[in-house]
Image 1 (cartoon, rainbow, N blue to C red):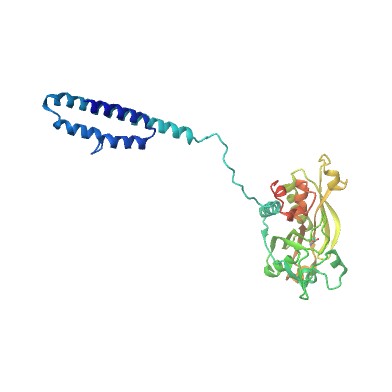
Image 2: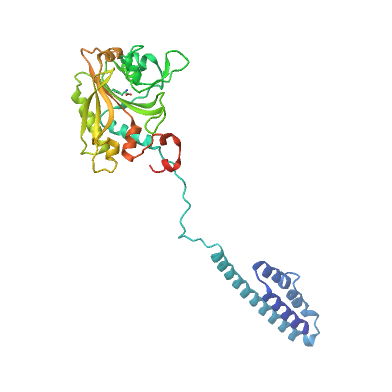
Length: 340
Ligand code: PHE
């Protein structure tokens, strides 16, 4: 009997010392496993002298019930504590802001180009791309500038080591490509792309920059069509109240040639700087396609006419966003790029 009491006390103390589920399981095996002490005690009932057997057996069974109940209670309590621990230790704070994934974006020049494409697409102009490495013939001669023509000085040129091959100084040679491919059908295209000039890099000029050329050729196209197209474009891009102003100019491949300004509200704090105090801002060169150029493109100038224009979308982006240095476009400085 004293063995039984010693067993009960020891088992109870050990059970209370168990701090986690594995130690509880170990405790259970020690006392209730096949060779466990409680099992052994119960199996030993038969060996107890007859007169003590009933009392011993009763006590052994009582201890078995008590310890079993204590184990079940301890295990349940431990499971509760484990859940409680995991709730506090691994708590997810759903109110924390997430980690932001850095998102890429289109370059401000690309954004501006795409806006320009969309406006002209609405007016029925297709986008047409032509080469950046050009022949002298396309870049100058067929645009009505024979060798040594003084107007070539308007475009400082990167020549290559191959005679007659250069980097195009404007998108106008694209006019020749389109016309030769399309004649005698009418055309209505814009020609976007990179151009190159052998110039000093400053805040206002880069050696490489985008242009968007426009060309419409057909029967009965007049200066009024050119004016209407440019006006509609300027209003879509800069605002419906915008006025345009046309000044006479000179390009060898257009006749007459014009330059187009858009009015700039003098209420804008940058207006004086942007417009040099005039309230007008130059946005493009343009004109009616020169008869010689039409002929070089495969059209009979007696029957066909057309207009062309050329603009610098980066200059337009600079005006719209107040960018004061064209070199920012190629610097790849994220602090600049992320603003758009
Ligand atoms: N190619 C001219 C330039 O680069 C712009 C232009 C294009 C003018 C088409 C008239 C017609 O300055």
